[in-house]
Length: 444
Image: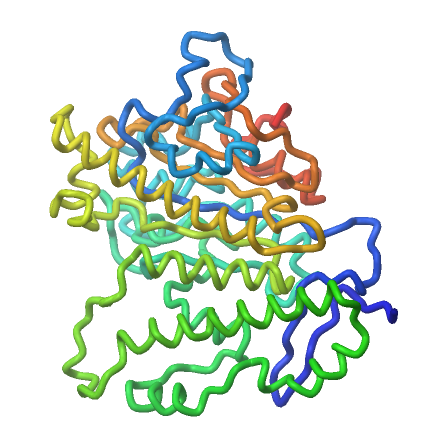
């Protein structure tokens, strides 16, 4: 059997399509590439229902195996063997530190930077985020250094929280102290950028014509695929069939999603609100991301479930009141119940991403086995705006470099940036400075 390069791809008219991992590819001493993914959820969590009960009252630094997960984490029960609950981590720079109100803006701004955000009439001053440190170091190995996604669009100008720039609430990924990394919220546009050379959807009529003329990526590369099949063994042929089938299904879903927003009415009559549900948007973004990771288009990504301070309502969960408003529940039982439902819903979306990573195969393993996937918020309790003992989850195996299936309690005030440094080190990025980090977090 002929040996293929890990960077093999199919070629077609103006299209290059990277392949998933196949047995016929050149063996590598490094094995599958490692991936670093951060998922951010806004407004903190409701007290109770997050921490596994078996560690209550135990000293700092102890760990215990995860068993039955508490209510807010219950959507992740199937991923317990790949999951760590990390308690005691803090983002001290999200606190006021003399700057007054604005905890939501600071929460997202500091989540991956650990730098006190400049508060100056909407001006921006921050620091490079952990994901972009990784992207700068290893991004040259892939077509895209990193990918930034979110269900809400990014806002660069204006003030969104007590004098802080809206950019702080809209982005968690920062290329420089003054420039956030661009974030995409349209799954079809992300797909086109990654796999179709950045085809612009244009206005409604042009978009409809583009959809009518659009052919499958695999149709472009049919001849290359036919030649490739002659080189593959039975197992690889089966993998290629599954890959092609999954890609076609994702394309179909993306077209369906686009068509929800494109009809025969003129552009000036189109509503500004997106008719697609935020949950479906997140899932489509997750599917595109997993495909990009599987095809080694990138190895670094961030996702925002919603912008920090989001006041999105969730009528399907029992309330039309906004999320941010509900987070200031003052202990009112009804509001606490809805916030808990929102928290569990967001964790469920994270679970969908983990499901997709686990299902995407790379040899005998899933992408989750080679990934570091962090979920969390820069606010602990949304009612009090606390920034210590943050709700942080770490999923994945990192090619055996993690010890999942545990709940670990770290000493109070341990910088969250210490976790970022530990993950950067496992990604091969060492000896870097990151915000208020005091060292590499050990024992994960």
